[in-house]
Amino acid sequence: MNILVLPGDGIGEEITRATMAVLDVVNARFSLGLNFNFADIGFAALEKTGTTLPEVVLEQAKQSDGIILGPIGHLDYPPRDQGGVNVSAAFRVKLDLYANIRPARSREGLSKLPGKMDLVIMRECTEGFLADRNMVAGTGEFMPTNDIALSVRKITAFACERIALKSFELARTRRRKVTAVHKANNMILTDGLFLREVRKVAEEFPDVKLEEVIVDAMAALLVRDPARFDVVVATNLYGDILSDLASELSGSLGLAGAINAGDDLAAAQAQHGSAPDIAGQDRANPTALILSTAMLLNWLGERHDNTAFKDAAASIDDAIDAVLANPKERTADLGGPLGTQAFAAVVADKLRLNPEI
Image (cartoon, rainbow, N blue to C red; front, side, top):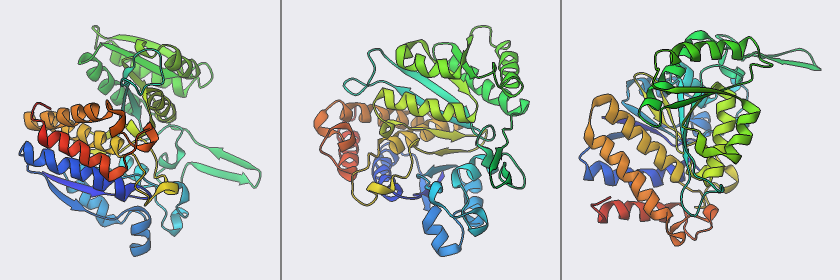
């Protein structure tokens, strides 16, 4: 299988290098037969080609079996007409990677919560309050005057139905509960449409419980009682904010793995940003991208009914847990002494030297 690797901006090169050190071990150990192609996006591509997302890279992505997507510093990109394309948004929309799957679970000695957390946030990521992906032409934001700015939120029955379906399918393999997050008391039409479609899908899954929670209450409940949640389905912005909260409560955004998944393609992408303030200093925690890559392997295993890929993904998860259990083997953001590459080397050694993992 061919994997396209796109290091991205800021700490992207460092955490991608660390991730590849781990991935090379499982590729050999489980005979996965992965081939890797590397390409530039973001500021590196902008300097060389005049755009942060060259068309050739998008075409490479379409032809790949999977993608490893590094962090994107699009806040600092120039305007679109000067080549500043939001790579994350473009990939999600143009490759139809509509499900941003973001798990969060507590780990011994790292969680900031008194109770246990083990949930997955299913974030629809092709429309919603993130207006830069809501229009065929333009960005979804505009200014009628210098003192008025408007933003368009787009919610479609189609997008709501398919993220709901993925959520209920996932819940059926877990603890059989879906929480739909909304603000239908104010966003009566848009969140009302979202809830309508979620309820329709729920009728097809009588063995899965559906609950509906208003988004601001959801933020409070994640802190107070995270154990009550299993699979959480949300529109774009709600899912983005709540998943960062959940991941930080579970230990750190540096542990927040995620994938962007469509029906035929998926991209591993850590939840966190490009952290330009620590780029090049070997200080970044690569765990999130390593776990994202494990999720990609599991997705490929499910899609192709390949046990080796699923076993490789599970072994990475187990190795990360084993390493993080030792405070002396953690990165600085978790109070440990290790740098980016040293941490990856410990994880790789754990996989290489411990066949039971």
